[in-house]
Image (cartoon, rainbow, N blue to C red; front, side):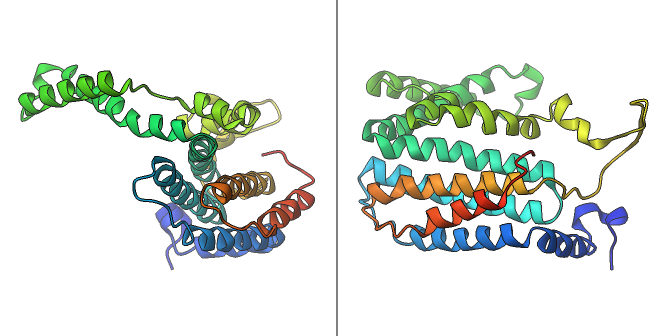
Length: 264
């Protein structure tokens, strides 16, 4: 059996960590897996119109955000707390976009038009490469991509929407300013977020670096995940005219009742 010291989180020994996490957080994981199954069922009920921008955006954003939520659970189960928080942030950002698109058809149109804004940005960034790094680059292709994207932006009036703007359109500003802001540290490896890797003594001197599994304070993260999944479900019910039997809300409420300590 390979050990954490030898192979890190790729080690066979991670199985023992998963057992500890599953035992310690059994009630939370029971609710999370029930939620996941409900959302998976909803995913296969998304029978939208292939030429409806809102249907296309919401279906894809739901699938992407659910996948990120599942990845977050897998990571947290393995004691990979920073990576789990980063993936939770990805799920939350996708949910902002999903909810915004579900609330207004035009937002879904803007969402797709943003493709041209993104292509223009990438074409311009490639043009900023130093001459020595542009060997092998097809300059004619880059120039054509830039010109075509610029023309499409002018034709459609395309513009980009940041995560903050999508949160506003989704009515989730408070979530953006709290949970999302907190989770950004894990994505960007901010100095404050990295502090959990330091082992300090009574005088606040760093004595060693912590690199192994961390499965403390996962309850708040599981709750955050559950609430995000609840928002995802709420967004697609009306768009795809799906029946809401209240099961998702009951599992989210159960997570909220379980989580007395919501610090993460």
